[in-house]
Structure formats: C-alpha cells, structure tokens
Image 1 (tube, rainbow, N blue to C red):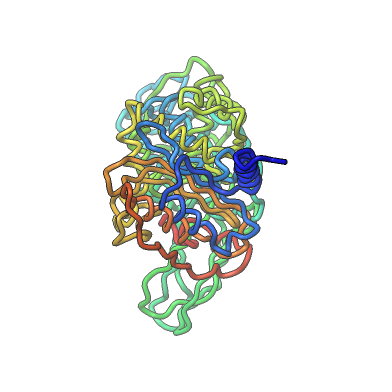
Image 2: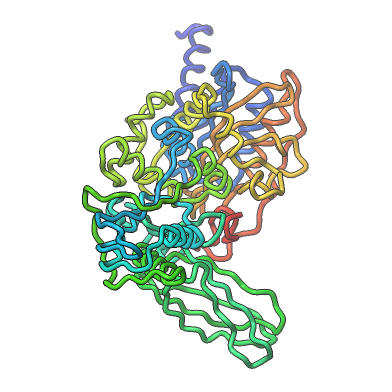
Length: 517
C-alpha cells in the first residue's frame, strides 16, 4: 500500500516529468504571469510547432518563466544579437574598414608609372559617392595618367559569395546578396551588394517606362515595361547572372517604383564603376582591368575610412541587414586568424562566446545573419548573451541600436516600428526580430509595470500558418504590463493577415517584403 504523502510526491514527480517531456512551461513559482503566458502559447496555430520562451530578471538572473529553454531553434535574424555582441568584443566599437588606392609605382609629374590597386577590406557602407571621392582625391594629387592596369583586390575576404544553407532561389534578392571585400550599397540603408532598380513612367501613355540603376553599375536591362493606366511592375534578376528583366506598366505621372535586388559578382561591377569615376575626374588608365591581390611593398596613395562599428549598429540592427552580419563574421575571421572566411569568422565568434556567458558547444552557426537553415540557437543562449551584454562597455550603444517597439521612426523603431504601438511595450521594448518561412523569433529587453528589467527570448519554428508575430506581441505586452501580485486582463493576440502564398519566402520576411522596414 502506498501512503498518501508518498502518493502525492510520486504524482508530483510524474507531473514534472510529463511537463518537461512535452515542452510545457515550468515556473519558479505559480503565478498569473505564467498562466497567461501558457495561455498565449496555447494558440491553435502552434499545434505541431516548436516553441521556446525564457524570461529572466535582467539584473539578478532569477528565472521567471521557461518553456523548452535549452531546445535549439532556427533563429532567423535574431542570430544578429550574437553576431553583433561577439563582433563588438572582438573588433571593438571603434573598428573601421579601409578602402585604399595603392601602388608600388612612383608618381612622375602627372603620371603614375605602374598599376593602380583598388583594395577593399569589406566596408559594407561604401557608396558610389565614396568611390567617386577616392577618384577625386587621386586627381587632387595631380595624377592624370596611369600607365599600368586598374587592379581590383577583394582578397581580404575569400571568394565564396554565399553562405552555407542559404536557399539557391533567394540569390537574386537583396536580403541574400553576395559577400565581397570590394562591394557597394545603393543608399544610406547600406544594403551592400545590392542595387535599386527605379522604374518611372514615360511622358505619355504608350511610351516605354524608364529604368534607372542606383548605383549605375553595368547590369543588362531587358525592359518591356510601358506607360498605361494599368499599373503593376515586376523586376527580377536572372539567377547567377546580371540580367534584369523589368515588365508591367505604370500610369502616366505615377510615382516611380523601386525594387532592390542583389548583384552578381560585386567586385567586377565596382571595378567598372570606379574606372568611370577615374575618367570623370580626368584620369586615364591605359591598361585593362585585372583582379588579383595587392603585392607587398605598395604604398597608400589615398584612402576612405568607413564609419565606426558603433555607428554601423543602427542600420545593421534596426533594419536587420544580413550583409552587415556577414561582413562582420568574415572581418572577425580575418582579424583573429588572418582568414576572411565564414569558418574562420564563426570560430572567432565561438571564441568570444564564453565572454558573453554562452557555451559554443550548445549551438550551431554557419553565418552571421541567421539566413542559413542550418543555424541552431536556444532561448537559454540568447538570454545569457542579453544579460551579459549589460555589463559591457559597449552596451548602451548596442541597446539603443536594437529596434524599439511602436516607434514610427525607421531608425528608432526599425523592424518593430509598426508593432505594439499604443501598448505598455511601445517605446519600452528593445528587441531583435527574426523571420523566415516557418520561423519567427523575438529576443530582447522589456521593463514591467513595477520597473523590473526583464530579458526574454521567444522562438517559434515549424508552424504552417502565416507568421504568428501577434503571439510574440501578446507575450511582450504581457511582460510589459506585469505587476507583482496582480492578475492582468487577458491579452488577446491579433492575428495578422496570412502570407500571400504558403512557402513564399519573400512574403515571410521581416515586414512581408517591404524593403528595410
């Protein structure tokens, strides 16, 4: 016969085992917050999905809520939390990338008697204006003729342009652009490795639409777009080549249509653009264009210094820029081991993780952006990094650079600017978003109604509905409204419209294919 106390203990043990095996939440103390979070995460769209949520006190580390905390999930762009924190520790907040004009030849009057090397080190913020400024600086030294070749050197990074586990059919899109140590961005969002295709209506109905590239690199344009009352434009780059098809129509007087696409082989396109800048500033290169490493013994003629890493954090994290993350990974690899490769960069990141209270043996990363389908991180790891980051000298800059819920300014609210407005989380929650087909995540900081600072990581994988970001919002608002000892009204999640087509990656991006939202 089993006595009642022993029976109760056995039942309690069995309940705990069953709860852990099914991924149910465990809380240090039963409380209304845990009940509400359990209810929010019982949404029927998550049946068959995998969900993890960890909430801790940011200062003490007290565990407030955990569900599947050590389970590994595809993180999407929340991986940028780990990448940026490791980069700040490895490279330093004041790190800059240099783009240089070098030569081993002497300047004789107005002539540079030898090759001119354009050497990049991976600056993800280079614009056409910056390359033009380099040409202007060289012209200001008096050089008018280069008797050798223009040599483009992108050897600071390796020649592997796309990450392991990236989808091949994402290759033409700006969020899956190619890495290069000598690259270019179209504007001050710094979507490096991409080009903005501007389509404008003709002067009158029946005329061809006008296509402009920003920056003006040498892509082949196949334009069948016209001017008519039936508006609707498509822009697509053919996989693996720099051939862009533009079709559809725009109404007379309509505003221009913009599409951002990746470019194939950024180094070659940059070299062609820079050669035109030299010509525009009165410098003739008599030789051809070559692609090789700058030899030792060359001297810097002029250079361009990027913004600091501290300054880059804002466009990187607010707008969730994938190629900034990959530039950081390869730059870390180059600094730590002399190799600008993904494997070397990931090794450098893993070496930095113990300093962020994270164990590299508990995760898999193949890139810095979270674009790889092979990336695996846990809510526990994110919460550890978020807590440790608060002790770092770079924390305030980094914290400020995270998207802020409900703030409509793109460079404050970032990818959260249209979420949680008018709630207790608005202008309170600082967090990184992450989204791909079947993946959505939100990890960051929020202060509750008692002024208690919390860190949290919510990861949802394997759902077949549209991305349930409203569940993330409901969790975040519930954390923001929590007050010790008080029950809260139920926070109802507001389902978002379904994606345009099941499995459409573009529809599942951070803001449903709105550029840099």
